[in-house]
Image (cartoon, rainbow, N blue to C red; front, side, top):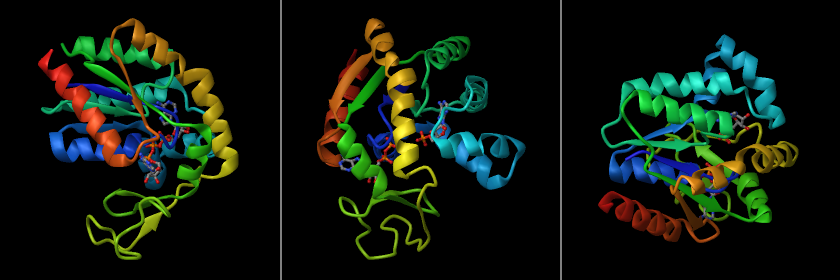
Length: 218
Ligand code: ADP
Ligand code: AMP
């Protein structure tokens, strides 16, 4: 099953993706993670996108479509979770075409709805384990033992350069202008499922599970 998790920055897409990878053997494709990896490796692509990302703007469609195309070719037995992609109508059309070429399709689009004020709270408290990528929050989901990752025992943590109020404002603008039209696009295709992303992580997870089980049963 191939699904998209759609929602503004901080909605919980990464958090829910990691659980689905763990529990359903799906493969998470996060274009944000791929771009951050490119930056960390010091590649030409990484250098090209750094400033755009720090400002909170979207990188060009060609770049992210190219990244996704590479990963799709590798295949995924449990299916793909698209996290942070597509973000424009052009990207959505490209994804359709790429999946079609591989004889695959999209099975569901899950929109996580979260209020803007809550997004600011979530983004300003977000940190991740530098070793395994587990996502935490200063107040709502701190590590059980201070400074030690619950999952891998790692002791290095990261905060994103773009998780600041200015970049977040721009990222939200980009979301409402360029990404939110995808809600109508996928609704028209009969693929859209809305989930209240304001609820606690476990309740959001249970609702996503319910939807995926229903979709799997046809
Ligand atoms: P996204 O991938 O959509 O940008 P993340 O999964 O990284 O969002 O979550 C952003 C922040 O919000 C993280 O610090 C995470 O721990 C926290 N978070 C995620 N889901 C919830 C939730 N349902 N309730 C409260 N906090 C959450
Ligand atoms: P994310 O990790 O999804 O919050 O993405 C972080 C940043 O990477 C965004 O603010 C954009 O600059 C860039 N980015 C990630 N995915 C895409 C995409 N699908 N299209 C354009 N830019 C993207």
